[in-house]
Amino acid sequence: MAHLVWFRNDLRVADNPALTAACQSGQRVIACFLPTPAQWQAHDWSAARLQFVAEHVAALGDELAALGVPLEIAESDTFADSLALLLKLCEFHQVSHLHFNEEYGINERRRDQHCKQLADQQGIKVSKYRDQTIAPVGSVLTQQHQPYTVFTPFSRRWRALLEEQPTPPWPVPKAVDKPCQPAERWIPELPANTPPSLVATGEAAAHLQLNRFLEEHGADYKKQRDIPALPGTSCLSPYLANGVLSGRQCLYAAQQALGQQSAAEGIQCWINELCWRDFYIHILYHFPRVSMHRAFKEETDGLQWNPAGSHFEAWKHGHTGIPLVDAAMRQLNQTGWMHNRLRMVTAMFLTKNLFIDWRLGEAYFMSRLVDGFLASNNGGWQWSASTGTDAAPYFRVFNPVSQSEKFDPEGTFIRQYVPELAKLDNKRIHQPWTAGVIPGSYPRPIVDLKTSREEAIEKFKLLKG
Ligand SMILES: Cc1cc2nc3c(=O)[nH]c(=O)nc-3n(C[C@H](O)[C@H](O)[C@H](O)COP(=O)(O)OP(=O)(O)OC[C@H]3O[C@@H](n4cnc5c(N)ncnc54)[C@H](O)[C@@H]3O)c2cc1C
Image 1 (cartoon, rainbow, N blue to C red):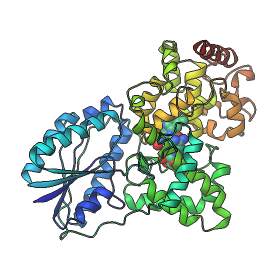
Image 2: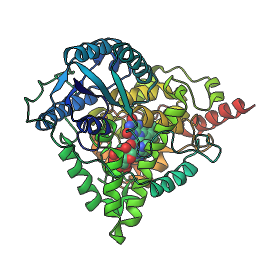
Image 3: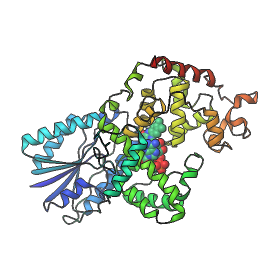
Image 4: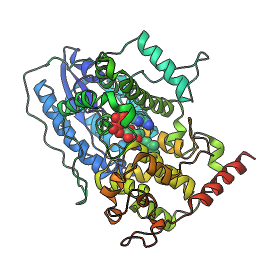
């Protein structure tokens, strides 16, 4: 009899509750990864993410082989097909106990419920683990045992809970057998223009990046995190989104770094971002409608968005005539990643100035991001569109020119991604239309920022009646 660990969104051997439990069973342990590219395509997964996952599954296979755990990889189109493959594996290896860490998208939840029913029919025990968040989903509740829908009180309870019940990460489990053959590589079909990998491959590389970030940038995080031209943020999101690093490991490393007084303010601010990640996963868990293309604030589903058309195309390709928005969209298209401040600026521009449905922006981001992560992407889009939990009030609309002057004052970031504007001075680069002749083929703004903002506010007001 064997224990099977089904890896999905948790591509690591350290701090992995499902793997740890299986390895502690004293029985033979095998592992599987069941890619479903067609299903992932339906979920708008990007080529950059597919590439990242493929590279990390290979690295995971090597780590598992060293622990004496063989990794089986079997590709199919859909979640339903992957369950059929899973059952075949169970039969072939005489599996008595299946372990996996939970996922919270609606399709993943339905797949896992179905999996449990099928396993029950075969007499296979199933153990599920709450791994994706630092404070387990369902544990951060109000005094009335309700989920929080606003970030600040959630974060207070989250911090108190973690102080009461610290969650140190699990170490890598002890080897269960002598080393085995590494798994065969899974090589997905990728388009030729897939961006090169943004970060180094493997758990060790992820930890190196985590520790280096905390040491070199942790202290200045609060001051530098909004400046897109600086390497002021950790860029750990691809690892976190795909489970190569866990939130617990990040929190633990941050707490160790807190020992140095001078770094405390910056690192506390970074821990707050880890809390945002937990918050959005908790929202996805408690309010599954947000993963069914529905607004958290249900009344905002009545908004009549503008047709997407040429404005949406201009936004996607970085040709809106608003330099910071265009630089950000080109960063996304070229690298598969975008700085957090710019995700907010571009999302607000799409939903407030162009008044285009946030769902289209959400899907486009997902189709490009290497760190595409349903809970955070949906949360960020609904925040920007004022349709979400902790949403920006509908009348507070970022002005992308002021944002540009404030967070990219010398136009360093704009110059990098919009080279047509590189020769403009530090004042004009934020609004080249004031320069008289706009350089090269750079467009005039596709929308008037002032009137479009006022129109959006009016539409939200009408909704309120
Ligand atoms: C419209 C929009 C879409 C977004 N889409 C995604 C997405 O698909 N995947 C994703 O991981 N993040 C998303 N975010 C959140 C945030 O922009 C990224 O997590 C962050 O830019 C990643 O860079 P970093 O690793 O350097 O972050 P750091 O600043 O170093 O933060 C550390 C970690 O905290 C988490 N985090 C930071 N900010 C947030 C936040 N606002 N919400 C939730 N978690 C956060 C991330 O896991 C991040 O890696 C989105 C934000 C917005 C406004």
